[in-house]
Every structure is written in C-alpha cells, then in structure tokens.
Image 1: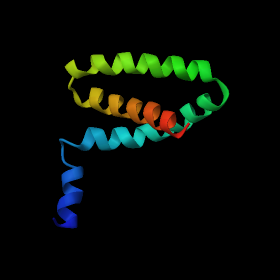
Image 2: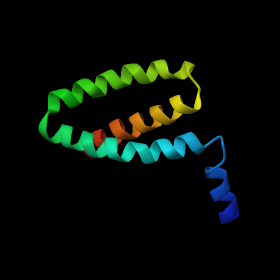
Image 3: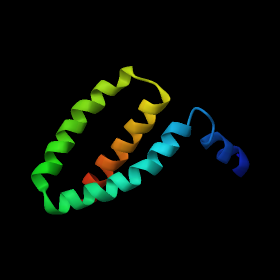
Amino acid sequence: MDVDQNRTGLLSDRWRPYFFGCLAGIPVAVVMLQVWRHWDLVAVTWFILYLFLAGLDMFWKTYTRKLVSTALMVGTVVPFLVH
C-alpha cells in the first residue's frame, strides 16, 4: 500500500471525525492525568460515568457526535491506562 494512499485514506470523510477527535482528546487527556494525580475519587467517578455514557453513544452517528465521542474516549481511557 502506498504512503499517499494511507494518508488520503485516513483523511477521507469516513475517518476525519475520528482523526480530529483523537487530536481534540489530547488536551482532555492531559487534564485527566492531573485529575488522576490529585483527585482520585473524581477521576473514578468520571470513568464510571463515561463507561455508562459510551454505551448510549451507538445510536447517534453524526459527524460531531463521532468527534466528541472519540475525544472523550481518548481523554478518559488513555489517562486511566497511564495512571
């Protein structure tokens, strides 16, 4: 597979909300790392609430919803795994 084909595939209309969601999730992950560091109870509560809200997300497949869901997933799960 050609490098240009990979790049255009990731920036296609299908994958664009997930790509930008990952980029938007980086600042959320940085903030959540600080929350895990100082307020464990708040972080655990948010993680449990996120698991519940992520299950409701399968019915809304708009561009904005995919972007926000991906950003929240990156911002919640990555700091949990790092912590």
